[in-house]
Amino acid sequence: MALTRDFKVTVRERLQRDPGFREALLTEAVDCLLSSDMETGKSLLRDYVNATIGFGELGGLTDKSPKSLMRMLSANGNPHARNLFEIIDCLQQREGVHLRVQAIR
Image (cartoon, rainbow, N blue to C red; front, side, top):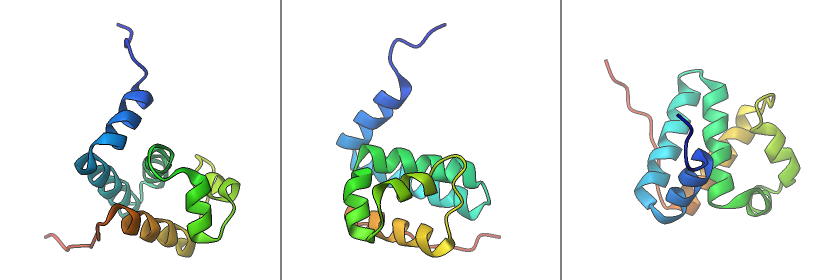
């Protein structure tokens, strides 16, 4: 059964109108990264950036070229931890949220 609408378009539109969904996606991206699922975490961050701030604006905030940021979050990208945390920090500030790690037993 074929989808009648492109999934990425649907997600992008929801991210643009729903702050709770944006926060949930950003949280899930960081959770994936902390669980060593780099591919999914980077993919979710890339989708988040594309639907919200855009790589141009993120580049201005991080003082990095948008193309460099796109490569970092690509499937083959291998960002340094410093760069990854800088990206996450900028996204948190722009979204007005503060994510924190909580130990669960």
